[in-house]
Image (cartoon, rainbow, N blue to C red; front, side):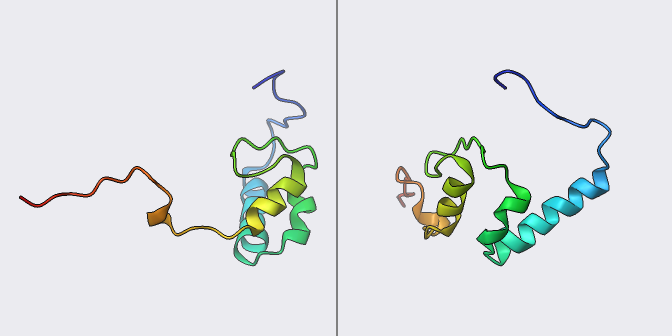
Length: 83
């Protein structure tokens, strides 16, 4: 991590953290309520996935983009040949 972690509360309640992640998953990922991202994601998010842009807006755009089925994502799939 460049510059080290900032504002990390090592004594944070694990149950509260788990509840927050669960709410994010339910509201944003499952229901698609992208307008709630500001509750869960910092505006200055640094995203490391190439297809998703930087910041909260980039994440919202990436989450709203159509996704390809998992079996079509890898272009270097090799097929088994029967002998």
